[in-house]
Length: 331
Ligand SMILES: [Zn+2]
Image (cartoon, rainbow, N blue to C red; front, side, top):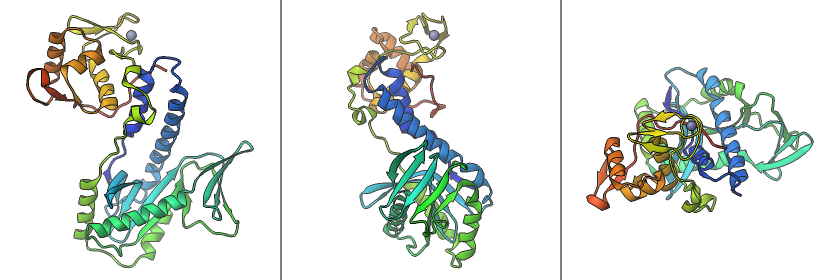
């Protein structure tokens, strides 16, 4: 049973927004594109284990995607957490093609593809750290810390080869191909005899959901980009032209003639991805390229946003229905 669904990561949405809002030829674009393609591959890999996870199904398993929990005043992240009354299982999904060599001597992961070698941090170390952090989290929350915490590195691409250095080390209990995941999970189930009461498991589930906080790193800080470098205005939802102009109560694109009454919502979603959830009338005018304060007020009223303060100091919180979807890009 899936308790927490996987969504498009907030950081991916921020990267996409940045690509929409940087002028063509901006020096950071290649770097941002590279980061986006890495994150998208990761997301695709994580999504690809949904199908094998279906096979463990039943009511006995509780699955959480993208968990970020506080422990010892820091946060730790887990791609996928599987809980039942017998154990917790951490899954770290790697979507890397080619041949993967797990170097257990130097604790690194080497990918060999088209004759080239690339080194990645060792995911075995990563899941071991996550398992320790989860145990610490259980103990900090006065939950059973003798509850076994297993972890697996899941290789999502069935054509990716797995090798180990030195070759006699057997990692089949720690690294699996996506499709063997259900078999492995059944094995953990068979090998574990102790069980915690169902009531206690429900308490753990409640606490995971309560304490989970999605990371909200500033994309502008991350790439050292100043707000003034961003392209302002409302984008055409049809052809991506920027900026489109406000004609009476609608937005009209000079490039494709498309008219859209709600095109400003996507622009404000971009604003929130860069600047955070609150906005003033002045900030809205600047970001949407609206000259008239009255027109901005009318627009803000139509959005029915929660707000605090009065008159010029009024601050609105940007919340919209149907969130977490990708928009059309410009690059
Ligand atoms: Zn257009």
